Length: 328
Image 1 (cartoon, rainbow, N blue to C red):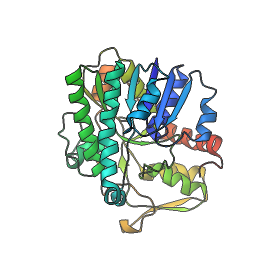
Image 2: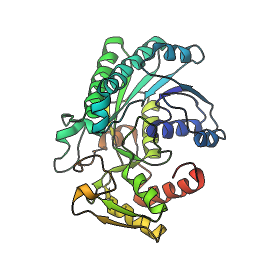
Image 3: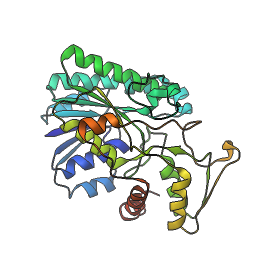
Image 4: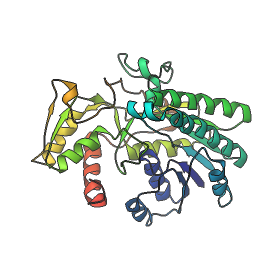
């Protein structure tokens, strides 16, 4: 099948592109920024074919350029601006346009092209103020988004599901946990580089990582996210409209830093007494509860493959072998 991935050069998109290509699929990437050259080289040896387009998901002409050359079977909509507060203040209108109106353009394309399935990549951030109960967060928990990113993601969910009802379009929403891993880089539209990546870069330079707190969270590795999205693409008839995607386990950044210290002897870390002195950004003032993934396990048989140790070994080895001097 030919799958269109919007935001194909971003963290989630690029892991998904890799997974789809490795399975022999034709993949079309529509992204605001070009695919990194080091990713292009790595993907050239995979079984599928990759077609890359640089464009704006808000622009109908960019969608038409894809339609003229490809018969798209499914769309996975990952494209979004992931802003911190400074960008929210500076670029409020553009963030809303890309994250919400860009989603509507993607849905219009899906309807015109008669795609089999449309997957909207949302975020656990939509749970917002309700993300801090005791225990896991199930899909039935009412979203209470607080940041502009979370607000636009929640709006995108609602628009996608309503659009599906109006035009009989097969829409599935995937609420992703805190993603990190392979191919992570600064795209210019994602301000929130993950804490595991930040600390890995500090460790590689033999520096000191100062954590704002222990950082206990359900960190999910990029390849596991890609596996879940492919499972959502392939299942004949999903039972639910909305699925949490997480690792089903929690570990802390202290655990991660201990592993870094075992691999990089000159690296050190500590937890700050005053969070304002930290040099690692967790992008939130506190850690939310983990996502419950019982629904995706039971309906799709999805089981995450990467726990802490395996994700760490794979990520550090990948950085050494793939990035070298391209990304520090």
